[in-house]
Amino acid sequence: MIRAVGLTKRYGDRVAVDHAEFTVEAGTVTGFLGPNGAGKSTTMRMILGLDHPTEGAVTVDGKPYRQLPVPLREVGALLDAKAVHGGRSAYNHLACLAKSNGIPLKRVDEVIALVGLEQVAKKRSKNFSLGMGQRLGIAAALLGDPGTLLFDEPVNGLDPEGILWVRNLMKSLAAQGRTVFVSSHLMSEMALTADRVIVIGRGQIKADTTMREFIAQNATTHVRVRSPHIGKLQELMVGGGWRVEALPDDDGALRVFDATSDAIGDLAGRNGLWLHELAVVQPSLEEAFMSMTADSVEYHAGLDGLTDPTGGPGWNRGTGTAGTTGPSSPTGASSPSGSSGASSQTGPTDPSAGEARR
Ligand SMILES: Nc1ncnc2c1ncn2[C@@H]1O[C@H](COP(=O)(O)OP(=O)(O)OP(=O)(O)O)[C@@H](O)[C@H]1O
Image 1 (cartoon, rainbow, N blue to C red):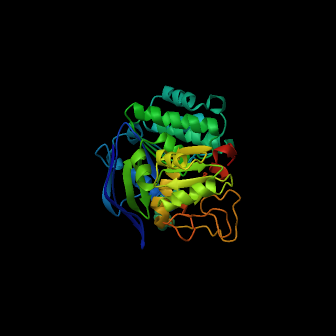
Image 2 (image 1 turned 90 degrees about the vertical axis):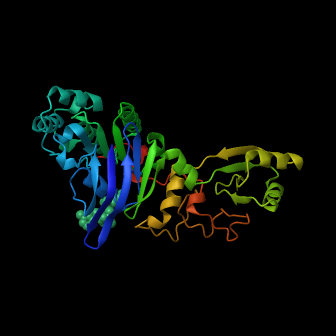
Image 3 (image 1 turned 180 degrees about the vertical axis):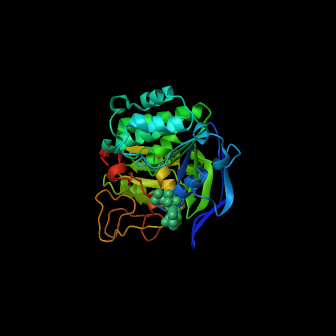
């Protein structure tokens, strides 16, 4: 179990972590989410004794990291996959760690097999792909068979098979009763992996709850409706006080808030209107996260002047097709939290991008 009490870190005038209070329980995967610069890495560094709190404390199983007798046997961490001596082979890197922590060398072979690096174990790690580096970092974290594991962006650079492997690994480590604390910017992946979430924004803990509750409390379910009589149906729904938004994907569908699918179906039936689609759409972790952290984002990209063919979140919709016709948004603007939310994650961390070389 990891416990933070009043945990604070200041760098000069800048408060990186601000009186954080949270508990990461054993037997669960807990996701650690926050926008860039929110304080995730600083928190993880303090858990690992790499940074000293300015105020407050954080303990692992009741002790500060520096008081743990053989830390690697109690806490394993992947913080920076590049923090490996590139001239050493994966085997030698792990063997050095094992020797200096009194861990038998046979454990090195075990973790190498566990992460699937047998073929390249004797090769210099400087030639490793980003994904291979992540696997080596995970092997090092598992070396001491610790009860607590910290992973900072563990799927960074992994291909889809690697991402699935990490997901299953995290779940099985938690199922064995270990404490698993993992940060990631890949919301869809987090939603599939974590049981609980701790959200940090500008150094402050914004949420510490189950994944299900976090999504339910911060994003709204809506109903997607398609009909050959959509104009008439829209008129009736807006007249009934429901919030109705046009979808940007141009197939004529509407999304309806504040109404159940039953109520919409009944309304259509009573008025003799055909329905071609009526689907309840559950909100995503990404939508809930965007909604909660909107005021905590330190770095905003300027997207003015860009037009997004998909109408995805965060794009300038000045001339776009999406519009709100319901009473609650007379301006026709739709918020990022209310968007249908195709993943905005691109670049090297995009699972579809495959393994990127360092
Ligand atoms: N060594 C340092 N000196 C000064 N400021 C720092 C230092 N380390 C972090 N910070 C600042 O503290 C804040 C929190 O940084 P941190 O790296 O913990 O955020 P993060 O949530 O991990 O961000 P990211 O998702 O971008 O990795 C940021 O404003 C950062 O600029």
